[in-house]
Amino acid sequence: MGRLEGKVALITGGGGSIGAATARLFADEGAKVVLADVDEHGLAVVTDEIGAERAAYVVTDVTDSDQVAEAVRIATERFGGLDVVFANAGVFGEATPIVDYPEDVFDHVMAVNVKGSFLVAKHALAVMRDGGSLIFNSSVVGLLSDAGIAGYATSKHAIVGLMRTAAREVADRGIRVNSLHPGPVDNVFQHRIEVIATGAPEDRAAELFEERIPLSRHAAPEEIARSVLFLASEDSSFVTATTLSVDGGLKG
Image (spheres, rainbow, N blue to C red):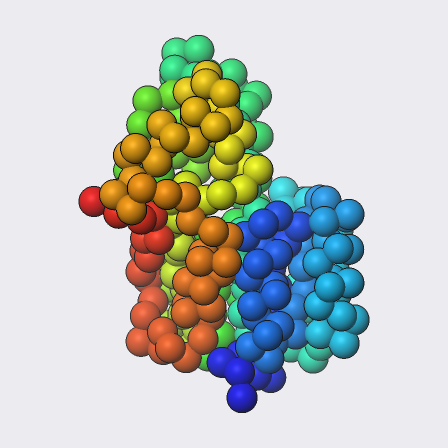
């Protein structure tokens, strides 16, 4: 039996590389998955790959409470319950000093990364079966920071506070709540950040970031997915209110 046999999972940001890799791995481990994202094409590709018996999708803007509630409803009604949630949707914003940081960009980053995570927790925890697992995707910059990333770093730090609060509130139901803190991942999202942050061409920007990583490389989305699986499964049965770094040693 797979480590998630008989479980139902909801993954936001399911059309992106980490969400898609996690959905595939969850399905391989026996789960049925519902993917949510604003990118319908990405959702359809991943869902078709997994197959209709094990996967479904719903186009969802995580800043909209009604849409998040609908995604949770579809997961519970389509597959009969909800056991695992990976709150993975997120945006970066800009690389700009605080004194020049556009307020509308800051508001958007906070809306998607913080309010979106809050809404996922609010609606999912109300119906999640006892013994479930909620995982927030934060970032290595949810544990440290750097110049020019006020919106992104603030939002990712806020997720840690949300996680620790939720973990306390649902512990009596045996539900575990943790946050994941990936370092640079080899995907479009990360490479866009690197170009914005450094002003260098993509290949050189990636090299500049890898020079700061002790393991000297980016992570593959599948490596991040395996850490999500750990937090979702009974392998982490005594782990809650914890920040799990998957950053190649960057934080150290």
